[in-house]
Amino acid sequence: MNSIEVHNLSKTFGDIEAVKDVSFDVKKGEIFAFLGPNGAGKSTTIKMLTTLLHPTSGTMRVDEKDPILHPEEVRRSFGIVFQDPSLDDELTAYENMNFHGLLYDVPKEIRQTRIDELLRFVELYDRKNSFVKEFSGGMKRRLEIARGLLHHPKIIFLDEPTLGLDPQTRNHMWSYLQELNITEGVTVFFTTHYMEEAERVAGRIAIIDHGSIVALGTARDLMEKTGTKTLEDAFLGLTGKKIRDDEAGKNDNIRMARRVWTARK
Image (cartoon, rainbow, N blue to C red; front, side, top):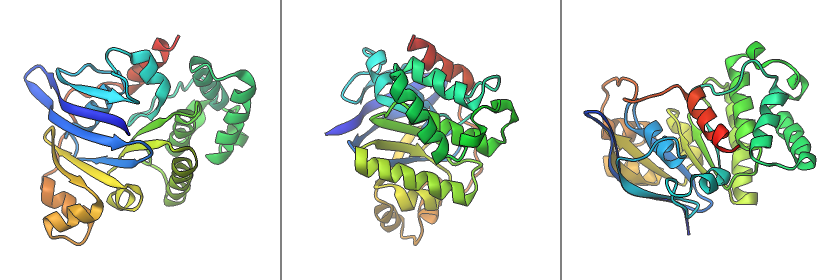
């Protein structure tokens, strides 16, 4: 059974085709890496899967439901950590978590316990009553990860979740996510520019470039395909070494996050 199915998915912004006829699936309970250079189409694909953008053409299924026809049910099934900051700086860490729990109808007695558990996990429990505007970038990232897991999602989308985190926090976060994957069967769909991270934790890896999937398989499959010894070398062999601009059509993810959450009301 698949948690995610994508068939011939495309998205254009004016004359720019950000995603071109993309097809792939993610098995239920799989840890799946979605890699690509800047501007390759990663974030646009995630925004379509998470109901933030409508595709120009093609079909999708998330938790066996169409994100266009059944956006509310799809939103209930996933948690998301955006690439760009999406917290409310004028609220405390606890208030950000509690607001998220309210929008997802997490019962009060469960919500309190879950918030405390996750804030301890990301080592922010002692700062739960501090305003987020006082936090460092790494602290905000940890809080976003905790928030995305609050409502026990079936699928967690992580768009560069470890950006700005030190190695100790990165390892701690992945250990927890791998435990959730094993014990609760949570499907993990993530992007990253840390190739060793993808090689270590992902069961399969898709590489997208210029809006198209150029390779899909295990890290070993990709290295064998390119005749390389590391995933980073395989990635460069498939996508080239030219520095890329940011993705076309990129939007402010604070606004995007609010579109998800306000739709939950």
